[in-house]
Image (cartoon, rainbow, N blue to C red):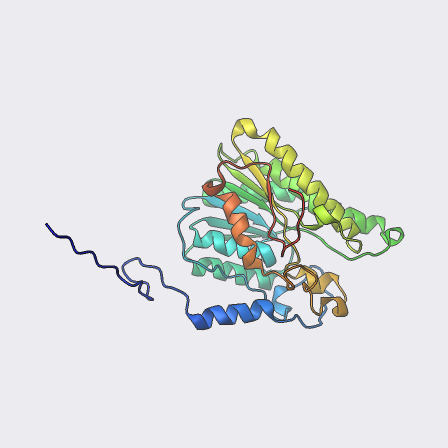
Length: 315
């Protein structure tokens, strides 16, 4: 008996469940966006607004869904913009129900919600300050009431301001950094642990500055070092519950942090100091967050991923 085997060329249209391949023009446009220099700009509002950034950060997922969070509920702090927004939309594409916490950036939050719903997912917006423990407890409670549970917590909300001279770092500014970036993470985990089931995941966003330091972001870098240590400590602490706790340490990423916390002349060309000679985009960080949130990373806890533009750092 003779068998004839035919090899079919992949179609470029999404038909019969086949993946639509990206067009060359789409790829070239994305490459151009990633390599173009960032112009000088500054925002006076704190926190910054993604809606006022030029160019707009790229937060949309690059690939179709594989259902890696199907049936899961995720809560993302700072989910209105930047890495939080990119992660929220990617989680939605991967079939999760998503609650996002944000401070006061209503326009950015509504755009994120629209993007999540466009992926066919449910979204809950919760406005408030993670420095307030009672708010964190209530936010988790509202998420569980709305979606029936909680499977993934992403701690991402943060505060950052430049300060080149330690002697000029005010007590109030130091407190705001630690209350937002460290206390907020602790409060959210405390609230979530009453609801997270065995096998759940916590992802903490730290920073490359946790590893290499930054002489103009002294308070911020210090809090990110604390987050790295907190992540490792909680990973050991929660082993018996099979709750995985990992981190992501991004490099220079084009988010509202940058024009809000830096003078216009330092924003110009932002990211070109990285080994890869450009700033990263939020949707280049979100896949690391997704990996640690889903079962692809089932044999990892206490670890940190480094999508940082080429900086070589210790694990």
